[in-house]
Length: 314
Image 1 (spheres, one colour):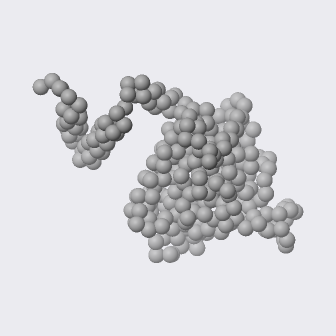
Image 2 (cartoon, one colour):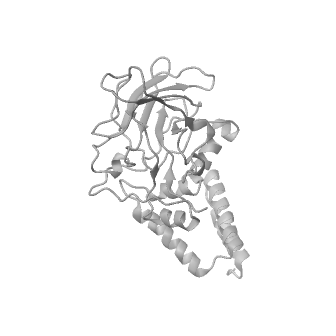
Image 3 (cartoon, helix red, strand yellow):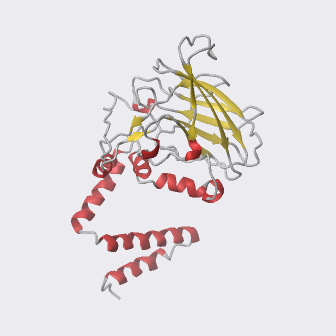
């Protein structure tokens, strides 16, 4: 029978979604249609608004390339990345977790780096930081031989994939935990940085009167067979944007203390001025050890992108 009204349209679409043979696919698509059609009804979406939305979605894909992922930025700026993380970790959202959103800048094949080694691979300004992080299981026992990927932005606010002036894989490294679950490495103190605002995500942030800053952090990815792969970020407790992170990533469990030292011998003889230390413990859960597709695969060419900092509207 031909469709005669909006309710019959929604039901016709749901009937087709029910044809999916896989139960999980059927549930996801059916829920998507119910909520999407419900949203259109709730806001009474106009035709010009619909056309604008289609254009924005298309632009997300057009701006995504080997060195930039606008879709991942959008998911973070809408809080979806953090919601998926929180409800799937920490006993399915019931307890605190050291897991965090993956972010748009993880690359595979980071250079294997020895214990205590540096992830600084080209001249990089910034105050040195000496990190010691430990990986534990849910019983509090150390997890040995886990792979730990580490990456961060430079003191200029760029990840190496964004910045042709940095060496390939600068401020990235892959480590293996020792028998007591420890990884030690050297880097530079991270700083907060603005996310790009030249695309649809920037339009959203500007429309809402938000700033586009991420608090200073270092990224981690922990992988070992038999355990759920954990992405995480350890944020600096002295950053002014912890409560207004544009990507909604900061949780209380992920605020680390980067301790400043101005006296005494540094951990490395070449450090003559101040330095920081970071100590942090991750807890990983039993589960599937699976690596997702990386959001980026390569490095940008040409000039550095312009850094634009937006001010949060009061």
